[in-house]
Every structure is written in C-alpha cells, then in structure tokens.
Length: 143
Image (cartoon, rainbow, N blue to C red):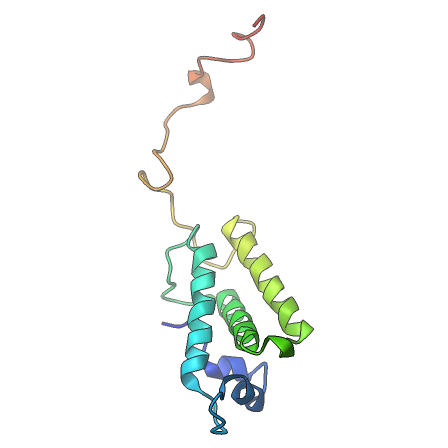
C-alpha cells in the first residue's frame, strides 16, 4: 500500500503541474505510472529511515508519514525536470528528510510504538549491569 496518492499530491500542486511533470508523450493527461513511481521511490526512502525503528511498510499510514511521502514524491516528480525545481519543493524535501532522520533517531513520535529490539537484530541483548563490570576507574587506578 502506497503512503500517498495522486489525489494527495494534487492537494499541494495543480493537476496541470502534475501533467507537465509526467506527460513526456504530450498526451495532455497525467501519467499515473510516473506518479506511482515517484510515490514508490518516496515510500522506499521513508522505509529506509523508519525501518530503523518501526516495522515497514506501515499497514496504517501515520499522517506525518503520508505528508513526507507527498513532499518527497512531488520532489521526485520535479527531479525529472531538474531545471524546473522550485526552491519550495527543494526545501520541503530537505524538511521531510530532516523529519525522517529525527524519527529514525527516536526524537519524534509518529503515534506508533517502536519495535522492541530483538536478539539477532543489532546484536545480543545483554543482561549485564554496571555492577558486573570487571574494569572500573577504581580498579584501573595506577595504570
């Protein structure tokens, strides 16, 4: 399931703009395949960040993820026409990536519970405590 749709994109940019960005054949219509590709690329990018903390792909798409998907997909559409990249789109893309970075770092909640770390993913969970240390500043004094 895609995190955003053409209708979500058309809430931020006009259908004429979407047509201009996707209609390489000059049919005068939006090329849905190119829109779907831009969304799929955006969602893959989102999954690389969010997958560090959550199980992806999301089955229920949090609103903040949908917003990032739309902004990144629009950026991807404009990237097909590099010379036409509006600064607003570039800024929104950078903001989306900054947001995803903070989500991956656990600094921003998306309304979902992070997946608990399981043994085998990122190493073995330890049951050791600070009292189990062999080398401490006290035992190492004089060295």
